[in-house]
Image 1: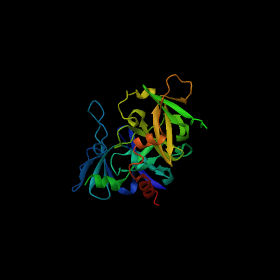
Image 2: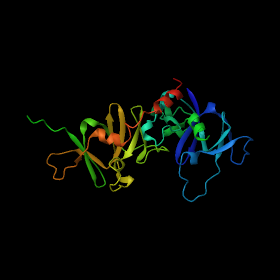
Image 3: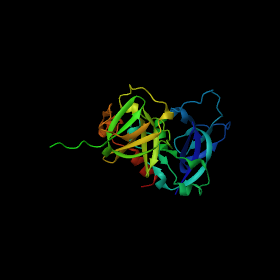
Amino acid sequence: MLQVILFALGGGIYALKLSVVERILAPGEPLPAGRRLVDLAALLEIPRPEGGQTEAPHLALLADGGVALSIGRPAGAAEIDPAWILPLPGYMFRGRRAPFRGLIDVPASRRARLATTSLSRPGLLLDEESLAEMTC
Amino acid sequence: MLSAPLPRITVKAGRLRIAIPAASIRQIVPAKGIVRVPLTRPGVEGVVSRDGRAIPVYRMTSLMGGWHEETSAAGLTQIVILEHEGMLAGILVESAESARASDPAPARPVDGRELLSAAGIFDDETDGESAARAARGE
């Protein structure tokens, strides 16, 4: 089983493997020295909501690379079966490599057993290695 | 000796009507549960999960050259899932029905491979599978 943390961003549900996240910082917590802030929404070209004003995002300190990833609003954690991760075809992306490990699609029969309702609809599991490459 | 024409399915989106060989169509499903995915090619609406696979869904207009009249998303109620050599892509349509020889305005016949080619399927190798394998620890 794979532990993931979930967060809501731009109307979608995204996930990171728990093993690659050192800590989550609440809005307003100071950025530790040496950490580089990366806006995930900007990196993924997710449009800002109309109206402009958005709540302050949480930050995920990634275990490697000194990156603090602005992740939006945390939406819980879950333990998922790796078989639920469906690969995304490379041909649907603009670039050669996209920062996603796949679509997390929890079978309906297993959703009730999860500790979160965030995965009642499919979410996207991010690929921390590709993210690190994109933020260099 | 004349051979019988291959059965085709006529699909419609806005003013665009095309007739796709039925043999190229794997499924026609309701346009529900489309998950938007960032950084995709123009025309990709998102992905749907069907039978344990994530299938990219395209606007039909984008696969036909992009110059056709756009249809409002609300009118696009079905996804036609095309398959070629194991590769899958869905197209969003308003309706899908059997093509009839008696149709006074027959739809433009389009090869299924032609549509999938426009979806970029044959452009490059895919690396989504390898990323997912890595996530599964394989």
